[in-house]
Image (cartoon, rainbow, N blue to C red; front, side, top):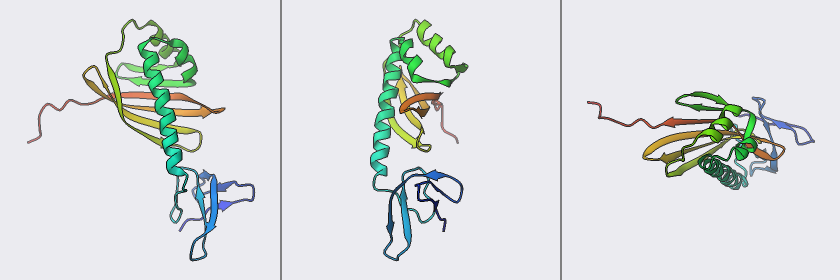
Length: 177
């Protein structure tokens, strides 16, 4: 069974060196000390904190709101939104290549086409520590389906997109015999 190493200052790490934030400390009925942590890693013997589902729902709601605003900004060619939305090191991977932050902003501003009707669905979030997360979802866009992932990094309380990828769904032509 793994053990958390901690200090009185609240700095805790797992045996694998992952830093976690204690939410509450308690003793199990058998007398064993346990710590509920607020992080995505729970080693053997660790229990999920009571607050985790609420944190996940909140994180999902926040990132989905940002992502929906990004789609709207792309549709209206709002380059100003993208200047604030994208982290300085941001990249986007498309079927046409990899674009950096400045290329993305230029593409948004100069693209004369409006997006066809679109709808986001099946949104999920994977926290990567306290300051990073991956949002994944499916988007229906003008009769096509895309699987999308956006990596968000939080800096000074603001979530910004650091990486974005859209993968077209493969249209199944026939079954395998």
